[in-house]
Image (cartoon, rainbow over all chains, first blue to last red; front, top):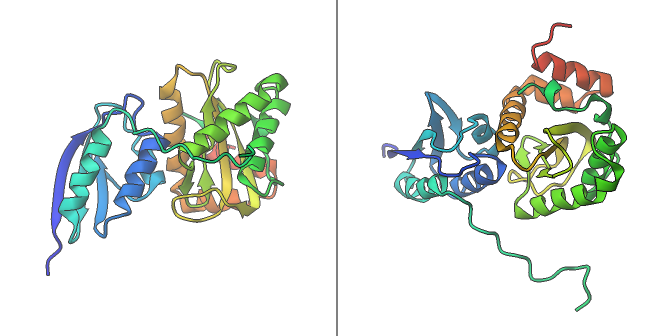
Length: 104
Length: 156
């Protein structure tokens, strides 16, 4: 069966650009998909599952990127990743319930 | 953004002794204090800020590298240091690997562009297998300085 290729053009929404936190969220989400994920900026493509490679793009806010997914779940991967790249702020993380230094 | 514009040479550590995440952060911030990059009075709050940032998500970016960092009002420009751990430290990296190469960055609250440019330089250089490997195998601070200078394109 031929690999499914899906492309989507997006714009970086985060005012601080794709620094470690958004790069981490993108890479972690991309890792959930079986498809190969590439993120392309000005003809330079990087592995979307690698935080380090995403950082290399130094993608500031409003930068245009193309997500290229190759694989059976390519469409789902692109649907999931596009809003994460375009969001202005990452969602607040869950605060841990227990502080091990406090006595209950 | 060249390494020489933000790495404090006197804060480089070639043989980190710490065996856990907090220990590494304390050792690296301590090195910046010892090099005069920040005041000793600010050490505790900087360590706390860096650890708080780690709670949001590990700064272990893969390939045995981590970039613990924080904004802090005590600095008016981005400063940082490099530390190498020979045995590696568990840093909850996304790729599950231990971290041997640490770049700790402290930036002023209002200059996000500098931070992004420093990350770009760090990640681009580390993509080079040779650079990565030589850093991990460096025998001392002078080795590390040479590698960073070379990466900056400085003729020796």
